Image (cartoon, rainbow, N blue to C red; front, side, top):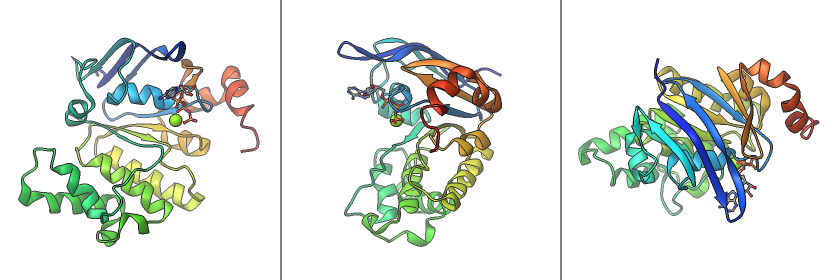
Length: 241
Ligand SMILES: Nc1ncnc2c1ncn2[C@@H]1O[C@H](COP(=O)(O)OP(=O)(O)OP(=O)(O)O)[C@@H](O)[C@H]1O
Ligand SMILES: [Mg+2]
């Protein structure tokens, strides 16, 4: 099968600091990939380069065989690359459903089909009953779900969930895990960026570990978890968490 995403030699610098790269990474259609690494290792930066929020300083990004390196974020989103943000950023002063309807203004969805589409997405994340709640009234779990729902508006082929479980209880983590699994069963390739190790290990078919902007290990979850270098930089540092 040919990759849906190919990241080739991508680098990102902030001034004199190279935060990322060079990184080579591919994602298969429908794959579940875990992206781990200590704080500041470049996980979010890599995803910012993939989604187009950051322009990479070097390298190429290919989506479905097409070079998208020069494409802006909104074009990449329309092509099917979605991401949720580490810190949820709902539109405040709006209801849950309005948070999905507003971005639809920028998408080729017929006006009459929008509410139905928004409700489908809310149902898929378990927020249908909260459609008219103000975004400010949501619990931490509901905010995380709304953040994912917002990413689903574009009907993505690739979804990056950047720490979608941070701050949640064990039960809530399972809830979000199940939600991501259901999305994946519908064919969406998912990159899970996560510090909650048992969740990444359960979810992922393959795990990639970054350290100081470079991939230090890649493979089956158990093999990466047992990798000496990974244990040293990651588990060692975070022991007890
Ligand atoms: N906009 C920015 N300007 C300057 N430096 C940045 C910027 N974004 C990220 N960095 C730096 O790039 C490096 C990688 O950061 P990044 O946020 O990608 O790490 P991360 O792996 O997502 O960490 P965390 O697990 O804490 O979310 C860090 O040294 C960070 O300080
Ligand atoms: Mg991050």
